[in-house]
Amino acid sequence: MSIYSNLQEQMYSARSTRVVGSVKSIVGLNLTVGGLETLAGIGSRCEVKGRKGAVAGEVVGLQGHDLCILPFGEWDGVAVGDEVELIFFDDLIHPDDSWIGTVIDGLGRPLSKYRSAPRAHRRKSFKPQPPRAFDRKPVGRRLETQIKCIDLFTPLCQGQRMGVFAGSGVGKSTMMAMLARNTDADLIVIGLIGERGREVQQFIQEDLGEEGMARAVVVVSTGDEAPLMRKQAALTTTAIAEHFRKQGKQVLVLLDSVTRFAMAQREIGLARGEPPTLRGYPPSVFSELPHLLERAGPGPEGEGDITGLYTVLVDGDDMNEPIADAVRGIVDGHMVLDRRIAEQGRFPAIDLQRSLSRMLPDCHSPEEFAIIKTARKAFGRYADMEDLIRLGAYKPGSDTETDEAIEFFKASSPFLSQRRGEMCTTSESFAEMYRMILEAGIEDPLRAFFEKEEGLPELEQAAP
Image (cartoon, rainbow, N blue to C red; front, side, top):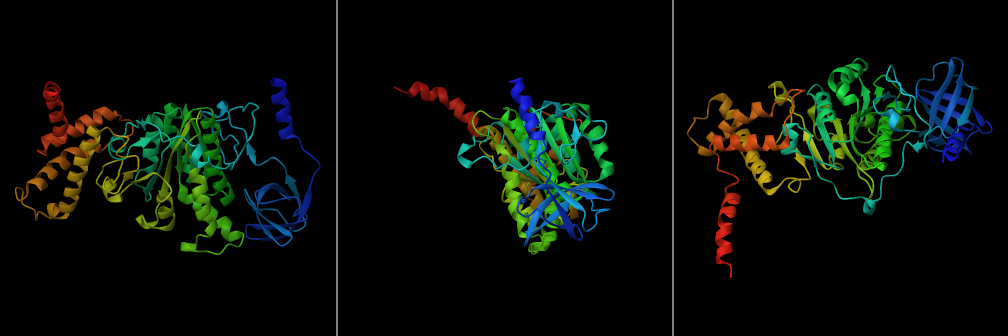
């Protein structure tokens, strides 16, 4: 077996006869190459030998007999006539257990002090096909995140894909760190796509910490990197998760953000000549999104699952902008983070009325769902009357249902606010929510269940 593994690794790394072409023109990021059109296809990797060193690139389009190549960096120092070499088997990665606890870039190369010596392993494509529909298992059991808002109102299940929609500065990164540290999963794969450079170490050291990093693989592509590298980082994040899913592990993928992936694809599409459509996004963006998101989810029988949380950075808090609308139609639920709630000091700032998990009601027991249904109704009643209450136009005692909703809101709002290191089990969260419902004077949502249990002995006695 060892001989076979070594032979396989040598085959992957072996270099055949060099195949070269030459640079014909450069317009912006788009470099045109001649001489490789019969051997290279879309997605092929090339290396351009510029005056300041070699620059890696990828074939993204064909124009007649010429190839259109975009760089993983910049074309600095590249000139017309420079040599372009076609690279074989460079579009593969080789994830293994040694990657756990490391930080890598979009091409799978280790970064900074988080280096780890990778072992020889069979390489994997960056962009395989998603599992076929009838090969997938059903969505699994409910995951415990120990975040009250999520466990109660927008529960996550094994293999579910959830979108997190928010504007900038409302606590997405902090909530992702809480999920990475608290969620009941075997492995966490985090993709930071287009992230601010100064925030990467802060997220890893302060938000994620040693506890979270011990079972995580972090893929980083900062906002100053080329669009091809930002797109590649999202594909690499998913490919790593797929590798560990095949090992039977429960994998949690946190991708921040899908919007920056879409913006990178927009730059790539426009550079290769695609026509802009909705808000400047070319058609390829809306074909790439489902391909990326569908790769997550339950695996075939005998494999694990990928539970995915994908953040969407909405433009101007517009939840109906094109990327948000496209993602919402693909994923299995959505959490909306509201700036107004964040300004009130409640974190995570999840808008419970506008958030939804498509795993409900099946992932909750009938008793748990009855509690949540009553709580949602009270929150909705308070939201309807909130403006009048704040203005002082509502007189207490005018409406019993409104009075109960006000009391419930006063008690539940501080309870649902949660600091980064604070944890609460699902059973404790339901018990507290039930207690607050009763103390607010709201009708007991479990009365029907208690009456059913009390009437059961009488029915048994009456049975022949």
